[in-house]
Image 1 (cartoon, helix red, strand yellow):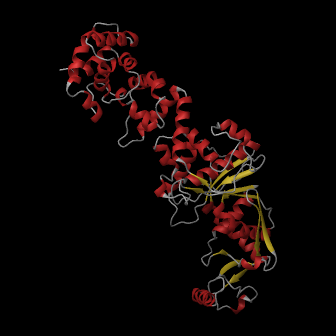
Image 2: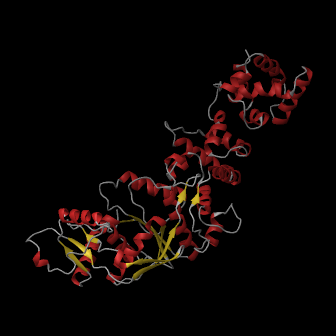
Amino acid sequence: MTENISIQKTGPVLRFAPSPTGMLHIGGARTALFNWLYARHTGGTFLLRIEDTDRERSTPEAVDAILNGMRWMGLDWDGDAVFQFARAARHREVAQKMLADGKAYRCYATADELTAMREEQKAKGLPMRYDGRWRDRDPAQAPPGAPYVVRLKSPQTGETIVHDLVVGDVRFANDQLDDMVLLRSDGTPTYMLAVVVDDADMGVSHVIRGADHLNNAARQIQIIAAMGASIPAYGHLPLINGPDGAKLSKRHGALAVEAYRDMGYLPETMRNYLLRLGWSHGDDETISTEDAIKWFNFEAIGKSPARMDYKKLDNLNGHYIRITPDETLVGEVAAFLERQTPPRILSMAARTRLAAAMPSLKERAKTLVQLATGADFLYTDGKRDLDASAARLLDGPGRARLAAALPALEATDWSGPALEEAARAHAEKTGLKLGDVAQPLRAALTGTATSPPLFEMLALLGREESLIRLRAYAD
């Protein structure tokens, strides 16, 4: 863990600041992507800060999930990741300075007093917020040794304006914002203070985050003013909804980035798809990362929530699978299989077969799951286990047709065109269609009813291996 923030920075400085209380959420990944794109577009700096001040809920596993998710997405950050909890002494230092400058004060109100205050406000139909009872009192009036919190002395008149790059100016009446707590009674800094101090110390020029943080911006601007620091440019991104327009939740499908990786989506797909969830460039749907970096701006971010469309995601992933180099896809499939339980490690022979079959395999796959499943017959040698559809093809006349066709295949050159010509001639000689001969062959060769072009696969597997599989079901 590091608190070092002294790295060389250029241009605008942006940050992604997730809390390590769970996996990297799809909405967080989009926020990270937008920050990363703008930093790369402007030649600026993209920083990563882990906001781990919630010690009860923050876990090392969640930290690893965030870092791994970022790396898988290809969102590299500049310098080391900063861990917020490690900077608690700095946060307290700033609060003490505001206390000394009269910008903050000690509040000795007890928990019982605050509860009674809220109950009274509720009974009168008033907004429930701190009433400033210790704002102008002498701390000497408190009992000796009484615990206290440090509160910001917020402005009580006028308004705080958030000049938002996405939604425009948003105004907050200051008399509706109470004096927020900066330090708890045990001396630990609050999230609101820590965020502002870290942004200031890290030189963050743009705070781009989800719309659920918009209300925090007014309070944070007040802390910034009390510190005498510069106010960053704010931009609050619309939320992501499910296909039905309701807030995205588990019932709509996976929420974590790593889940999409495990479902067989490529990182290029996720970058493209998340970019288009709330940002547009004309009618372009397929946008390479290079073009995204070249074109990205804040003006094209929409103001309304975006909707997940899983069919569109599948189609986009199919596009990226088709344009990805075959050797790269072999590596992706191998990595996908190694993540399975138990891990499946491809031999060099299996990798060679997979690479040779990839041009045909990738034409019909929309995910790595489909790609890996469709290539299953290439990974190991010997007799295939039949799925239900393949078993049906080898019921009844299927085995007899397979046995009858074998001599014609055994007598020919073991190349795709020669094998196809031999099978076709045998079909014509016996009054069958080519499919009547090919389907039992495919079932015995692959264990399924579908595969890349059959005769290419026979040639790829070779005479010896192909005949072992075919003879196993020709008896």
